Image (tube, rainbow, N blue to C red; front, top):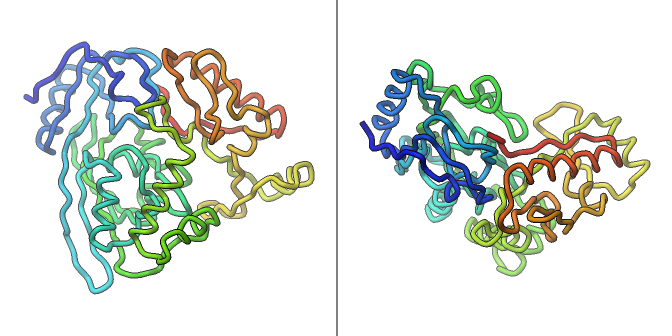
Length: 339
């Protein structure tokens, strides 16, 4: 059996830096190790929580079970074509290490997702996205194990029910499956996604547009508006941008003509609003209560200034949601999982 640790502090394993303990903690470095760990949990009726990089989770209490943190770290090429490559990537690979690998090998498809914290195995769960690109755009298929019975599974992209910041793994299969490997189909070419004005402006500094300059531009933009979790506890964007009917957006635009509205390609006849803009227009940008606050450079980000607790964060986030709803009549929902 893989070595298990007991009464393990989870503070180093969540980017908010909140204190919580796991009854058991394991970091298997192979698929066989994951299978063995899950089998032991089933035999002993031990609940399991799958933890990636801890960048999208809030532990509101101790976990009376096993926290399984995969440390598998392999990237392999499974198929080569004239215009594309299919890579199979282990769940434990750090997401940005994978993005850097693709850029260095001139493979296009995830470069706009540079700098996002977390692991490859966690990326499909939330369908991470940034700068007009989402993980689903390049995911070909994935492999995993069902937690309850240990059965392996293979799932193609269309079976994952990807939507904006969601997938089958945040709904029907939440807490029921672990992703062990993800297959990405990446292109060899120059069809870049650089429509965002701020990205185009940053790219002008480099004089040429290629995967390297796009990646560096996005890293620069993220560093300018998002706090380093090592210095200020946070989970990046805390809230999802709400998706509403066009009629609802038109109503709001009559009241707030400067409100940003974006197309929402994942949803038919709907548009996406800016949660950050709404929070800022509730005069909450930079607002702080005790140890928890809204980041002063990006209103989508909630931060732990040090010494804060998960319960403080939860109460603060509800206050933000209430203020936005009172002013705009729109519900904003957290991106993060609260455990």
